[in-house]
Image (cartoon, rainbow, N blue to C red; front, side):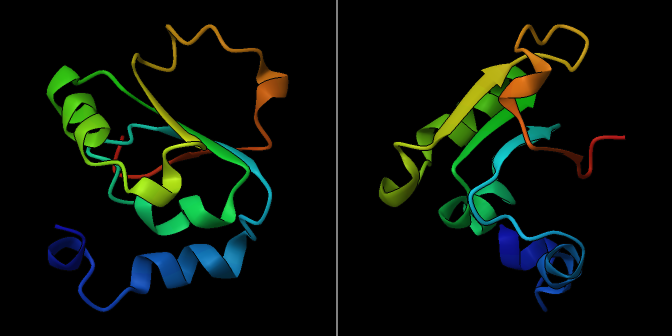
Length: 98
């Protein structure tokens, strides 16, 4: 699916010019099926992906790559419902969620 949305890798290339994900605790709002998390997760300390769509969260949870299982979590929630302290994250980003 990643290749279908961003076949030339331009989205990740653009993000990499703006932020270095190395060691960051990331919140991905509107994470969908996790497509972007799979591309940045290996560089982060941790990632929490949230999405209001239960089917998307289920798809993401069922396809976590083995190498990311210890650092990636998913929750069905909107940003309004999220009860995590803001200090839990170094970076919050919204892609494809507005």
